[in-house]
Length: 222
Image 1: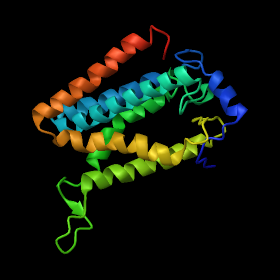
Image 2 (image 1 turned 90 degrees about the horizontal axis):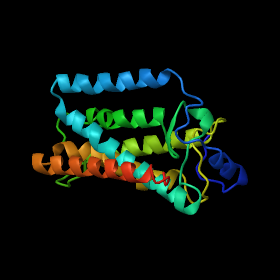
Image 3 (image 1 turned 30 degrees about the vertical axis):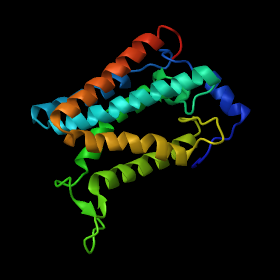
Image 4 (image 1 turned 90 degrees about the vertical axis):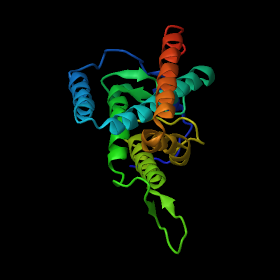
């Protein structure tokens, strides 16, 4: 049921080679429903003036896109990405490592992580006898990263190959450390940045995403 590392098998390579990026072959109406849910969540937060939650969502989602672009570039250069999704598991593949359903989930993951933090986001866990302990934002990022890494391990073991890991050295541990921890650090820390610094971070992040997509997709790299 759970797969913890890629196996380097020919079957895994064959599955990656069969991926049809941005093909509408499996497209269905769940695409529209999921998009509507995401719009509802964001506009509900904006209507309530919960702008910090919106910043959290955008911060993580931007990091997600930068990682997916990087993963697609790795796949183009080396022949295989670090992770990929199968045709059978989705209605639409955006880039070789991310499908529509997964990407929309990540558009909400930052909001969810941020809302799970205590009301006092400066509180610390395991603080004792004057020792500082662990900040709740950092602890929250670690716990969410671990949860997502373990769930990805489950997806890698599904019969429809929801996630495909080709490389033997890529699996739960590197996903946890190098991917999901940065995701949730962004969602948990960016909202509390100084306003100018936060604005600069989000604009730079999303401008970079836009430029890379505009250049790399027409070039056939991703």
